[in-house]
Length: 614
Ligand SMILES: C[S@@+](CC[C@H](N)C(=O)[O-])C[C@H]1O[C@@H](n2cnc3c(N)ncnc32)[C@H](O)[C@@H]1O
Image 1: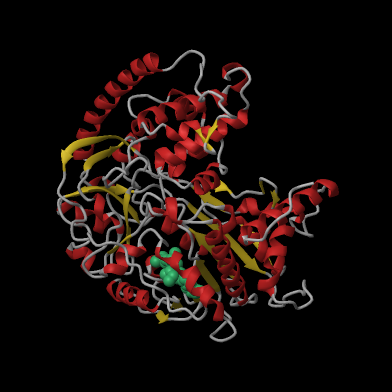
Image 2: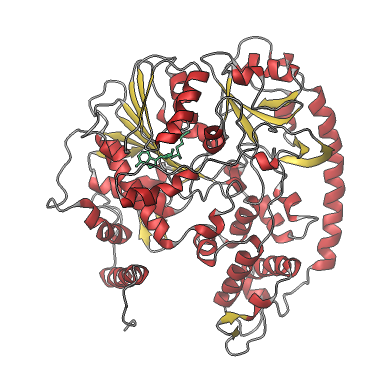
């Protein structure tokens, strides 16, 4: 059960709209307090216009591909089931690389929507183009924008009215009565309430109470009771397993967590990347506008991206698409490549590259010079990869099909740069694959994190530290869990003291965690970048950039097998951060307790019987 995802495509409405007629006043108020950093990378539309639109992607209606990776080992096979979630653009492209594209096919019949950013709409920024920028036809956008502004204003007034009728000045009995500790048959009483609108209201009420607990809590109730009820409600209302709801909830302050869950119910903007090997953005924009596509640049941060608002033609089958003038690609997908900053003539490895959204961008930035090894462990997916490489006119790529862990020893090394866009759980793209809400267990995250760590070590070892122009590794995932992001980097920093984190060079994004619950990471983890759908209006994403300082790996272990040590390393990393981290001090007693508790949890998760805590 849970709230159904809206079947719409295009730019999602603002969260205020999502919340519906102002039913969430606290969240609204909080939004206003957000710092400038939090402004969306892609501006959300103010209002979805209820004009029926012919399918933007009607030729891209197939489901994402679910090919199994040809695996060398059981573990690899298991890890690979996650590769289906992968990246924004890939699944659809894997389906039919020539005709189809489009990420959210089931959402193709959607209402048109408009951007609230008056400035960017009035004067599109085609920063890579020469010539007269005003040539683009934006009048249609302006007219529609005026209309949505009026409607948005009206809705806001209605929202205010509803707010006053729905919300009590203080919070009376929101939680269910305490009968037998508030539980019936081991479940919170509230679990028996299946009325989604009631649950939604309670989510808002609990949010409000938790934001002003001292004044609004019911006497005798603890914060933990409210949080527990909230988690239960979130899991029912949005349809998550309790396990995942909790895992994601813990990443944010309460109000923001709710915004995150809301954002996962809506699609992200449809974006395309200009293939500069074949055309320029301005020319492409003009050609598509002439075909009835309503678009504009995605923002100043990209010189090649266009956001598509609506289209009279299937955007995955225009002559320009077929001629390889653009790639249908989520905006978040641009970021790892921008961080990699490939240079002409370099030798580059894209370790897990299918279906090629990023590798073709790398080739474009290299202007088809140098050489790129476009690898992927999934042979079936390399077909789509090759097809995209051909369609986009990439001539400097060699497609290969190895387990990334075979680099460099059994395949090749000495690269100037390596991109590892790792297989992941896809918690950043839940709107696109709702099954993630329920099909991931703790063991899945352990398995993935293990594979990601191994791949990252291989990626590091494949780089030539003495490269004149490079020596860089970029690690990215479309997942926002700490296990798959900071913890993986922390592990690599420990195992490969010959690398260090450097700035991604990306101009927006939140800093990576340095502390997360009981974990302490190296302070340089703040150089990594996190992206969230509710903040940046792009897929949830993580990007880290490492510089290899030396080809020699200082010995940190006694040669024992790394895989076997992994759990201990993970334990250690949670409290030790790193020996290089001189700024942090630790309380030995507290650390001991944490280590012991983590060990108990881990043993339990592996199915061992664990004795009760002392
Ligand atoms: C996030 S997707 C990559 C998307 C791609 N970078 C793009 O931009 O189109 C992750 C990829 O990792 C591949 N993969 C999974 N396990 C792998 C392994 N052990 N070695 C190399 N690739 C692997 C999957 O087949 C999948 O294509």
